Length: 127
Image 1 (cartoon, rainbow, N blue to C red):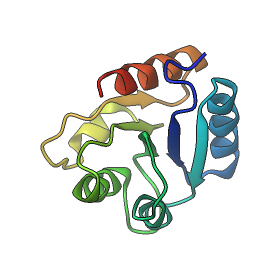
Image 2 (tube, rainbow, N blue to C red):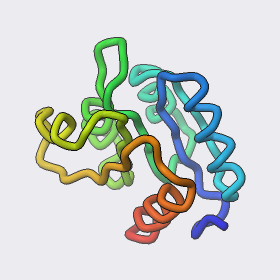
Image 3 (cartoon, helix red, strand yellow):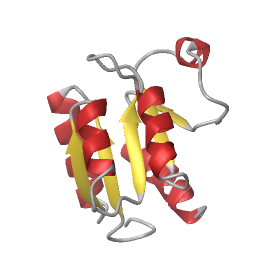
Image 4 (tube, helix red, strand yellow):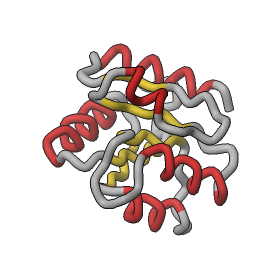
């Protein structure tokens, strides 16, 4: 079902139940999934040898690193990595947070499977 079957997606979500649901959904779409519960753990994965095709991260996470900060640091080491943000907060709140010049796509929670699939496929097809 995934446009790029087998593409590797790094899912960063602090809520364990949401993370498990997203992982299962993406695996059902034939993506390979690696997951992390916070920004620092995700950076460790990104700085490793593992190939990652897309970063899918929550915007608001505990622990001092937001999804926007994670995206910025991820792009420092992997400038071409597509990033998809997600948040349960409204768009005004998220867009009010300082970004870093990129207009990163955002999918609002709760999202439908089809919308998630389309957003990821669009980003992977831009490569």
